[in-house]
Image 1 (tube, one colour):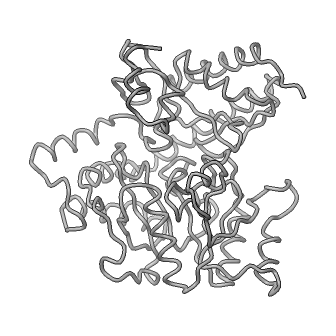
Image 2 (tube, rainbow, N blue to C red):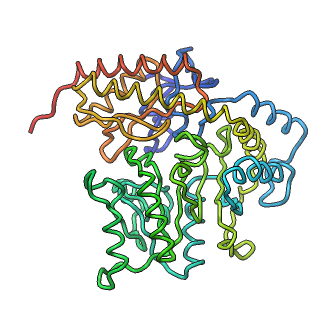
Image 3 (cartoon, rainbow, N blue to C red):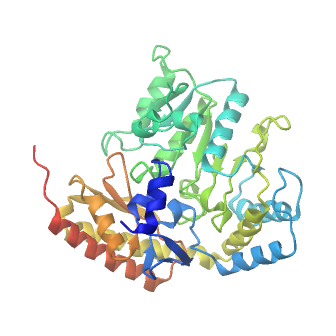
Length: 426
């Protein structure tokens, strides 16, 4: 082991994870590239687990942030009114919500994804007076108790140390097979007075399950789910913490389905620059909070307001989104070819937009592909209940040359992993 890494082994908690997968000390990052202390260059297909959709140290955001800090602008302000907050609210409304015919009040619940999910669950229960929440198989919504209660991963749930209640898990789209509509199951439970499932306060889901293995819900399924929620007066919560801000090709992941969720949870890349920041979008009729009923010390992260506002301006140019779609086509074409050309993976393509990957039927090989990629200078992670998917999360504004370079490294890594892999025998 590198002697400089020993301090992390000796002094940091055993809970650390990513530094085990990427065992080096990173010192610099720009765009879609990172460098370690030895000067080795890495292509970043991880992007902070979706927190860096615009890449590292975007020059426009950086300049605005430097100017703000240099002028002694307020850093911490709880939920006091400040010019950066004013600018963010105005830009979000004018550049994002209105063009999409969406009307939401904006809540600042705290700086992380689990903060926005917790606020959404609390508000849904307050609005409806009900307690239960419907969640879906393989969903992931955060690490605090409320968020864990609607998360499917058994390993993460066990970490709570207590029973997790007030949530009922239903099958996600195509969970059972490609022909069964899993919403038939949910609908029957809601209609049947003997099912034992009460009408819930809310349904919460990701349109693409980032941690759960890149499972994605079809537009038809999402539209029917919205109709079911409306029929039974259930609030529909979309967790767009990882799938939002262009990750699937559109600003909100649910846009192609033509739905309008009652509550939208956003964090990660909504801040643009990687600073901790989260928002909860609420249909105005459901914004019934009493002042201070849900609060947090770090709601007023003005540095994040500054960079978030600058990031939203990219979306004012229609060419920005078109360029994302072109990159999506390249990723999809590449992954389909890899799955076809390397049957050793026993794999198929999963996901949508710039959160796609290959689900490998051969046990352990996805981890080996990711490890081989790191050794060759590319950072990516695995996903799924058994880490069976190696996933690509490039920046939404990555240049074509770097994207193609990443593809080459992945193909080399697949070759190497396949050649070294020893099949598991019973």
